Image (cartoon, rainbow, N blue to C red):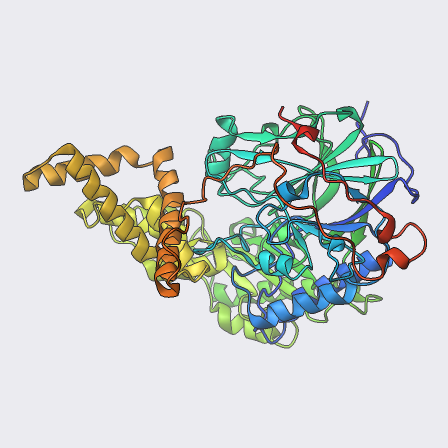
Length: 600
């Protein structure tokens, strides 16, 4: 007997007053390659298509699974385009037909306006957008803000699923009801995978559930983490998630696997919408891009796949030269010319396929992305890739990197050398996805042999460099060094060491005991808090604030769902009460108290 792919319970999709209609998308990456002459508008064009689809389908709300923005600090153009599109499609007079039952002060505790945006009296929202943050647009800096907080403050989206505690996570759902259908919307924004993995193992992640009628709720969970295993703890196994969930929307992974697939152990379904733009020329990005229209009625669901027509085509092929001994061998005269001609045939065949598929699709961009990966192991030599790619400059959207040469085990041989060629590593990082942390790791492998570094750890330095490079946190490295110096000085004072030899030995021992442990990982978070406190102190000195102001660190804040100290959300927006029908003026957003939820 086969398990149904799409349905928890057989359900014929039909829109009525009890059916939630939710548009689901993840990893939109607004602003990716926005300065590129050919691909600069791709992300904005596709985002326009997604929002237009939501309006045409008359969805109840949009659910985004993280990485709305590609950069942690989006450009002005990127923010302007995003705000313009959200205002164009998500603001209006269309009635909202569902209620919010949970305590919104808990659901949106980090917002200055802790209530769902369509209840704000100053704006008219026709399609609410709920979103968690991803690893590209996660909170950072002294104030712990992200680009989603700007949109949330402007009333354009509802940023939920953000945890403020590094010791324990309590996920309190946004409880929604439409007619007789009750929906518990859970979410958790991106957290470093190793840390979240450890928190799951140590039972430090708790998902709250309604106390009453638990079996009547449809439980929908949104997560933005590694789903594929990238290391021993650098991912989140599906088995870590609670088995009362019905559907998990998995962001961060870019391959489109949007058809819900059943986890036979936990008995919930997982949908992986994938990205709406190819941010790397890898096989996972080549699958057709889709968004999903999720219908929920009672405990039944139906997922409709909606193809995205504005996404640029992407074709990729692998070519292993050693597998074609009948065509060429390393000893053959003029073998490079023959290999180059064969590669040209492969690229031209992909271009022809792209042209055939584009017929009848006027919204699809004209120039496709083409990538030919050539494995030249076995004595072959690489030809000039730049000169080869220039032949297709008028036909492809990526004329600089149409072809990519790889050789088996070459990378492993390089990292075993005493002196790391960082120029070579940097060139690989642009084509093979090598991260900044990988460069730091290679440096440490060399530096430790000559004792060039004795205080800093690999993980801490890697994180600081990543913050400096990817998120433009200019003080990240300096603050790491200052923090580590102060911490080491305190340790030496406690140990009472006096001689220079004892100090050197104690420093080495202090560093080695932390390396590769949870303490090293916690230090990364402590540095961020250290930087935040330093910046806050500087702001206070500058602003000459009162002496009795409470400067306590709020980083370990834990939500208490038994408190009800936040004022109720304001009345609905202008004119809502006067509109006829079951519009927003007549819905009641009951704010559940702490007793409405319970731990499991």
